[in-house]
Image 1 (tube, helix red, strand yellow):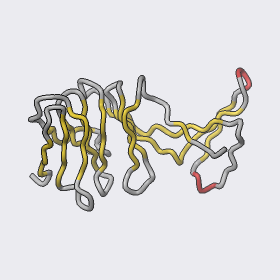
Image 2: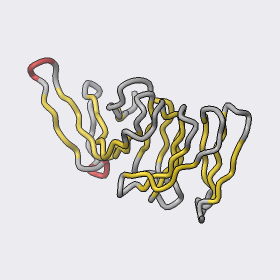
Image 3: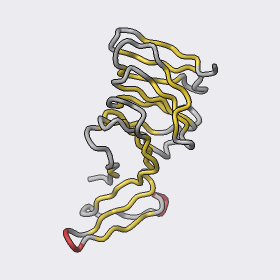
Length: 160
C-alpha cells in the first residue's frame, strides 16, 4: 500500500483539483463556494488513537521520512479563496507561471485570481447559464476558455 496525503478542509464535495505548473501546489474547488491552495509536501501526520494522538510535522518530502501504514498524513492549507463565487466552484485552471488561476461555477461567471494578493483581478461574464469548465492557453496563458450549459464556449483575451 502506497503513501498518500489527505487535503482536508472543504465543507462539502470537492469538484476539481489541479496541480500547479511546477507540481509544488494543489488548487481544489468545491461545493462550499471556495478554492483552496495546498502544499502537499509540507505535511503532518497523526500517530496513535484517541487521547494518545500526537501530531508531528514534516518540513518537506525531501527529508525521506518513512510513513508507517498506521499513520495518516495531511497536507498544509496555504490559503482559502472565499466569498467571491455565489454558487459552487466546479473548475479551476492555473496559469503557466503559477501567478494566477481561473475559476468558474454556478454563478455564470469566471474569475481570474492573483495568487499572492488573494483577490480577483478580472471577472469574465457573458454566459447565460452556469459554467462547467475553464482552461488556459498553454505556455503563456494569454487566452482563457469557458464552457457553459448555455451550449457555448467563449474565448477571452487576457492581455486586455
